[in-house]
Amino acid sequence: MDLSLIIMQLLSGIALGAVLVITALGLTIVFGMLGVVNFAHGALFMIGAYAGLYLASLTGSFWWGLLLAPILIGAFGMLIEFVLIRRLYGRSIDDPLLLTFGLSYILVEGVRIVFGSDGIPFPTPPQLIGVLDLGIGFFPRYRLFVIMLVAVVLLVLWLTLEKTRVGLIVRAGARDPTIMQVLGVDIGRVWLAIFGLGVGLAALGGVLAGPMRSVNPEMGSLVLAEAFVVTVIGGLGSIVGAVVAGLMVGISISMVALFAPEMATIVMFALMAVVLLIRPQGLFGVRGRTA
Amino acid sequence: MAETALLEIEDLHAWYGASHILHGIALHVNEGEVVALVGRNGAGKTTTLRAMMGLMPKATGRVSFAGRELLPLRAHQRFHLGLAYVPEERRIVPGLSVRENLRLGLVAAGSEIEERAAIDEIAETFPRLKERLDQEGVTLSGGEQQMLAIARALIAKPKMILLDEPSEGIMPVLVEEMGVLFRRLRDEGKTLLLVEQNVEWALRLADRAVIMDQGEVVHQSSAAALLADKDIQERYCAV
Image (cartoon, rainbow over all chains, first blue to last red; front, side, top):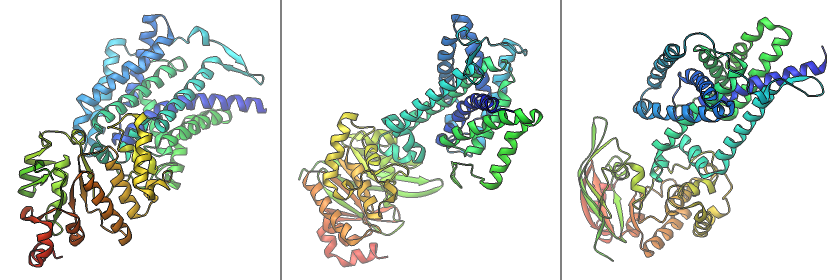
C-alpha cells in the first residue's frame, strides 16, 4: 500500500469530516449557548437537503440552492425557537429534548407525505463533476469544494465570534446571560439568532451532503447520531471540540475503511467509548458544566 | 442638591417562588444623592436591587425611575433608561479580557467607534485596570474585579448606579480608593444607591440612609444622624 493512496484516503476522510463538522457545530452551538439538546437537528439536516434540491431545480442552479436553503431553513429554525422552544427555557433539559424529538418525527413524516419515501438523487453541480489530478492521484472535485467551503464557513464564524461586537455578545451571553441583560442586551434576541444559526448550519450540512449521499426522509437519523458522537467526543458545547472531533471521526472512518471496510461504521462509536472512558467531558469539554 | 426624586419606590413586594421577600417597601433617591441601604443579612437589600433591575421572578408595586415605570419593563430595557447595576457577585465574565469585559458595558449603549475612546477614558479613572487591559478579567484580585465591575457599569454613563456590597472581601487600601471614587462620582452629579454591610464606611459616604429589616424599611434619616445614633445601628445593623 503506497503513501499516495493513504493521502487520498485522508482527503476523503477530511471531506467526510467537513460535513460532520458543520452539522455537529450547529448542534453544539445551540447546546452550549441555549442549553437545548436539539433532537430535530438531523431532521432539519434532511429538510435542508430537500430544500437545497427543490430550490436548485426551481432556479436551475445548485448555487442558489446552496445559498438559499440554509437561510430559509435557518429562518424556519427561528420560527421554531420563537413559537416552541422559547417557552421551555429555565425548565429541565428533558423538556426541549422531548419537544424536538417529537418535532423530528413530524418533519420526517411531513417530508415523506410531500416527497415520498424513496431516495431522490441530488445532482452534482456541473462545474464540480469529475475528478481533479492532484499529482499523486485523482480526487472528486465536489469533495474538494466541500472541504474548502467548510473551511471558509469556519473562518467566517471564528472571525465573527472573536473579532466583532456581535461575537463578543454571543461569547459573553453563553457564559452569563443575566449580566448581559443588566448591560442592556435583549438576550432573547441573541438566543433566537443562535438557534437560527444552528439550524442553518444543519441545513447547510444537508445541502453539502446531498450530492455525496442520496436524499431521503431517513437521511437525518444517521446524521443526528454522527453529530452527537462528534459533539460528545469534542465536548458538548465546545466549538473547537466539534471541529477537531468532526475531522477525527471523518478521518478515522475513512482510514479504517481502507484496511477493514466492515469496521468503518463502528469506529466512531468505538472512538466515543474510548473518549468517554478516559475523558468523560469530551476532549474540549468543561467538567460538570450545567446548562 | 436638586430635590426631585430620580427613583421612587412604593409598596414594592417581591417573591422567590412561594417565599415572600419584600413586604411593601417604600423609598426614594433624589437626583445627585448618595443613599446607603443598610441592614442585616437577609433584610431584603439585594432583593430590592434585583427587583429594580427586573431580575426577580415576581415583583409588584410601583418603581419609577426618571419618570418611567420600571416594573412593566424587561430587564434589558431598564439599562437604556440610565440605570446601572453592580451585583454582589461582580459577574466578571470568564474567558474575556479586562478590555472585553469593559466593552460589554457598551455593546448595547454606544457605537463601536465610541468604544475605544470610552475605554481610554475609563482606564484613566481606573489606573489599576489600565495596566491589565489584556489580562483575563477573572484572574484579577477580588478588589480589582470589583473595580472592573464598577468601571463596566460606569462606562455607558448611567444616571444612577446600584451597588451591592462593593467593599465586601476587599483589601482596606482598595476600599479607601473606592470611597474616593464614589465621592468623585457624587461630585460629578451621579446618583448612587449603595447597599453595604460595612455600615460606618457607607454612612460616611452617603447623604441619606435607609435601614431595612425582614423585607421592610424600618428607618430613614440623614446619614450623619444615623452615624451618630449607635442605638439604632445596634438594633438593626449589628451582626
